[in-house]
Image (tube, rainbow over all chains, first blue to last red; front, side, top):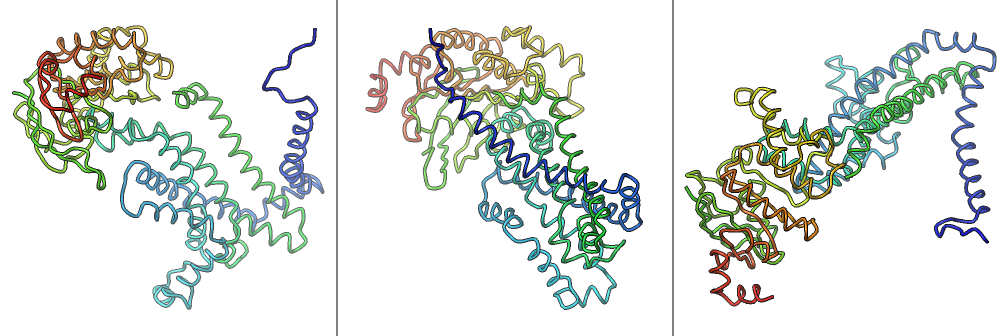
Length: 282
Length: 239
């Protein structure tokens, strides 16, 4: 007797073909470039790669990138949660405008974003003379880099949370209030636990982007070696100077930070699988 | 010491949801707001619970200017149509919520909260399910958790929005008899919204028939049935 095929099953050939295309695509565009970064970094062995990384300027670049991310990510986390909360749980005039505004950094080229800050804070800009008089350095210094990073990573947390919170509705918050909870208690005990996975994901994405941002930071930093060069800028600088091992070694650090971020996310998902399932079902 | 709702109005954008709804019910009554969808019954219930603000009108309850009180101070236990259980908390934590968010001075000690939760779970016949999450319960069980949670705050008023709407006919019948029993035991004033007249007449002391944002008639089930005052009421009941 002929074995019956499941009604929802596709032909074997089609399955193999689609699978092969997917694997080839992922391999070619995601895995291979990542592997090449590490391969190039270690082209002359571990020694030169480590030397390149422990170079004074490289260390300064790593430190600067981490500092900028350490300031920008918490800022945008707080902002993103506030914005998503306001948008998802309340109705107010100008809501659509606010949503559009949040998306602005996604649609504006980072280079343009950088230039905007030059126009505002640069020597010929609006606040330029005032800043010069008071010896406040924004451009070509840490504040400028942080500003650029904050601008570019603005939407990540909010964008992740808004659909999630809209989807969850206001029922649980209303229940909490009717049970006597204050606004703060409602937020901490009901809203936050319900969004924590989306929030974590948003923060991780935001962090990855903050570390990797090139365009906007490039305009604002001034590329001063050892002083205002972030990791991506430093990679370019090394690459332009034909220091391929150095460039790829620093790039490998960047890639590793990204991988650690992903691993962290996977670990948390695995560790809290039960809780995750409980909050998704329903 | 009764519930007096006086000409309450509410508009959403331009659409009027309540056109001066008035109702008087004695303390401890079990009141059904009965009407077709869009008649304003859920809006009225949400105004009583403080989840919606009335545009005008007044509500007095237990000698309190009810509408001037913030929702969290009203002690109005609200049971939502879709239960609105906290899905990241266990059943026991859900029930304990209203006690645990009280200001430090008024909050019972942990052991007392635990005892109360057990008592309530006992009352709603879910003693063994305290450690489960809402997603692991059936619809009827979730409904009972929602009720236990609302009762935990020792409510002055119990507000139920289509409490049996999502349940099958057999469970509905069992639960409504049981709900009436709980109401009598707790000694609260309850208001519940339904579009099912059989349900309203079976459990309520007073039935308020609503239409287009107004309460057309209030009376005991027997009175309303025997003597419908308006064309709408007699037509609605004859269906």
